[in-house]
Amino acid sequence: MISSILLGIVGPWQGVIIVVVVLLLFGGKKIPELMKGLGQGIKEFKNAAKAEEPEVKKEEPSEKLEEKSQK
Image (cartoon, rainbow, N blue to C red; front, side):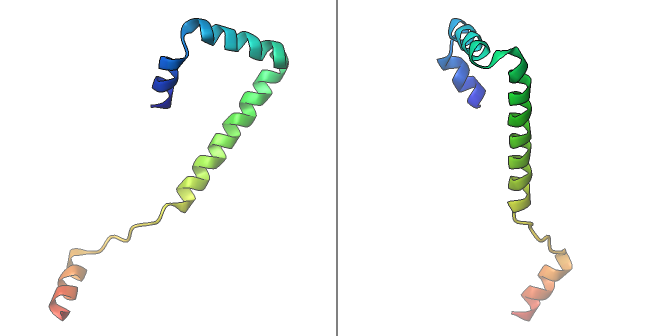
């Protein structure tokens, strides 16, 4: 979804200019290290997000019947 928004905002020439500026600022040797760090950060974020998800307890149908009969 975000990529489709960014593609609408950044045209092909702007993309080329961004790539050239990044190459000039960081050089060709530093970019793989930056991308590796970015990938590791995204991976850690996803793992943390999965760990925080509440686990839903699934009840057996027989447990639901017992609860109704007790009321």
